[in-house]
Length: 387
Image (tube, rainbow, N blue to C red; front, side):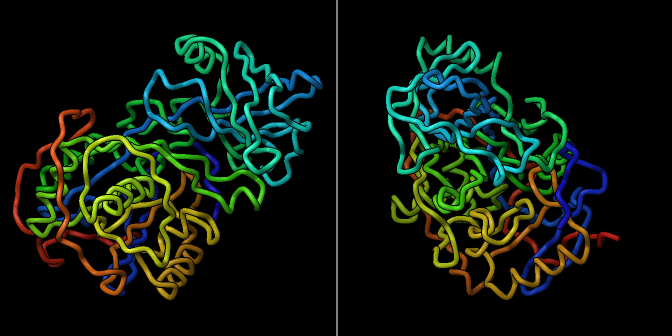
């Protein structure tokens, strides 16, 4: 595949590969709404991206470093002092992550000078470049420092510096993601209007999408890291109602799958509202209780995102998808093209027994559809092949 090197979220020529029922075909990505049916529920991640890339100095040695924030235990705006982070030595995104030099030797108690921010290394997390750090100052001072000094995390396939707004989806809300939930780049308000007109509901969750690469095989094997998420009561209720009506749950991106399936695994198939931390990995052996189809970016074999797709399609189907992506010149990475994969019958089957517990906190939520009912047949869809 071709690395997408221009930070345009919705290019006019964006492609969409569709895999459903053993068939594979190609569309213009703008035709995604035509794949959906009355009674379907589309769920997207409304997290905004943090300026999580911080350049500075390792105080004990005076050596330059780059710190990429990678996680915290909460989505709360005031729980902003302690993060896990990946540390690099001299250089920036223009050098491939795999080729970046290591930082100076880090130890608990080391001070890191990151522009206006000061942080202390609290501990090493089983790797010399993976640390827990704690910022000094109040929550307001830390937010101000991140806003004034931080930059979006990016990689060498994009040769020019990203602006923060390049990484925010049109529905971005709370800034808790470390890299953009980029499957959501496909969304725009006209597209959402088309979904609702087709009788499709739209809801959101908030999930702290993590980093996609550390440049180190040992650390990459740990991805995805633990990620906090929040499911609003309205989204949980919509899932229960959709399953009861035999509609499909369509996830926009891997983070939505991880959050919903984590809740289902915790509560015996129930999607419950509230904030939790997703700790599981999803792959070929995973049972999908909630999600029936995924709209995702194109991912390379061996990445954690690609592993998650194995829960939707078997190895043979994914191999055919890979061949089609190569043959048709699809672009990869966050500003690339997309795939829409409907879970095959032998990938755990369709589940309809989810339950939900009501709650009071309803940040985020759902839009109402202009139609309702059981999903239609394929003949009801207006699909025009991509040329």
